[in-house]
Amino acid sequence: MNAILPSSDFEAAIRQIGAERYHHLHPFHRLLHSGQLNREQVQAWALNRYYYQSQIPVKDSLILARLPDSEMRREWRRRIIDHDGDADTPGGIQKWIALATGVGLDRDYVIAGTGILPATRFAVDAYVHFVHERTLLEAIASSLTELFSPNIIGERVRGMLEHYDFISKETLAYFDKRPVQAKQDSDFALDYCIRNARRAEEQQAVLNALTFKCDVLWAQLDALHNAYVDPGHVPPGAWRPGEGSR
Amino acid sequence: MNAILPSSDFEAAIRQIGAERYHHLHPFHRLLHSGQLNREQVQAWALNRYYYQSQIPVKDSLILARLPDSEMRREWRRRIIDHDGDADTPGGIQKWIALATGVGLDRDYVIAGTGILPATRFAVDAYVHFVHERTLLEAIASSLTELFSPNIIGERVRGMLEHYDFISKETLAYFDKRPVQAKQDSDFALDYCIRNARRAEEQQAVLNALTFKCDVLWAQLDALHNAYVDPGHVPPGAWRPGEGSR
Image 1 (cartoon, rainbow over the protein chains, first blue to last red):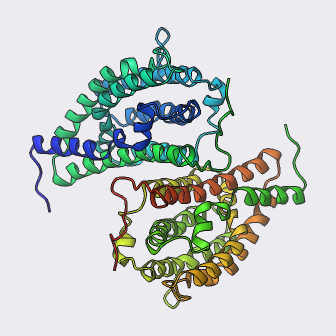
Image 2: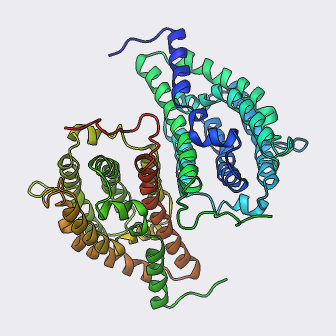
Image 3: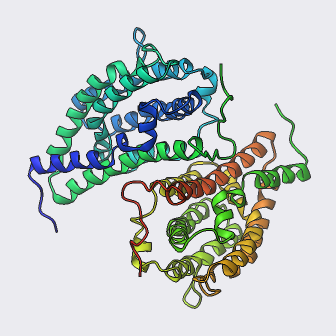
């Protein structure tokens, strides 16, 4: 039986997983951020990631349903508002649709999701099932990838604006608020995990949940890379360049 | 609203999906069957497909729990016996372990599943969730890929025995009984689907379930191809050649 780690070591172990497994390291992101993709490949990314974005409030609603009191639900509810918006403010999902149409895809085609890669659907659905089936501690821990997102967002926005003439600041408006939101969300989740993982096996469960979530993100980029980067093996029925365009 | 298809047209539509989407068309299978993979790539295939094999009795137990009477449960129970075996006869899972150790992998490593590709797990788990969450008709329809398996098994066994000196007939014993079992199983499932899809939308649900299952099989090979075929992008934490070997 392993001994429980001091909080600082536990947090370091969490951050180490990000350093080794977060999708900032994926070759597809390196291509995306350095201008080495064409417009169709960026469309494939926007189309497939829309499905991930669309399921975030679903997975957060499943967590919301499991939180024990109003204070915690108020805290977590903010995530759903961030992505679904309200009467006055568009949410992240709406902004992602704007990103997808901004790179030339048809709005209804994106929302229908018919052209996404099956592997995208399997990975995203695995995330939704995970937060439904595992402990609340593991469900919350699986959101800790947000600890690592502010850096990649800065790099992405700078790189895409610099390298792609079909990308405007308005197209990337989704990312404007994400670093602040992600910091607020992940501060809460990290604090929750550190306070509630009181045994060594609970700490390990947190680390495993974060590893799982890194796998979910990585697998989505693997699928894009396999389907749309040279030579490109598009699975039967999945989107092909030219389809679903405005 | 579409009209319901006559049985013969419905069966033709089912078989058409197999002709267009079954994984006999996947480039990884063409490499596997024609001797163009090395031993490590065959190991990656055996290791990852073990997870699929291991979950078949799980998905069949979920279907078993939903069948309405003893006659149907006796029919479906045979699938579980085929894969789990009994006191006298090894089942498919045990034979797949023999295949994996036969190509040089360590038995305990294979069973633990720690080195499988996350995309393998996501695809296989999507299949288990599908039979749990969808209608019984869709759950049964998702097994219809077995209609198409006898052909590919013959091609695989001939090709692997001819091209790989590290493969013996004993290593491939898993496949000996599968064509007969698959024919018996898929005859029953096809008859069930034809008799129980009585509206156009139920026929469409059957076709969609079979398409989904083809996607599950295809995505597993896509993941293998992406990770282990030139240039090969192995995701963090997944098996690398040399690991988990005897």
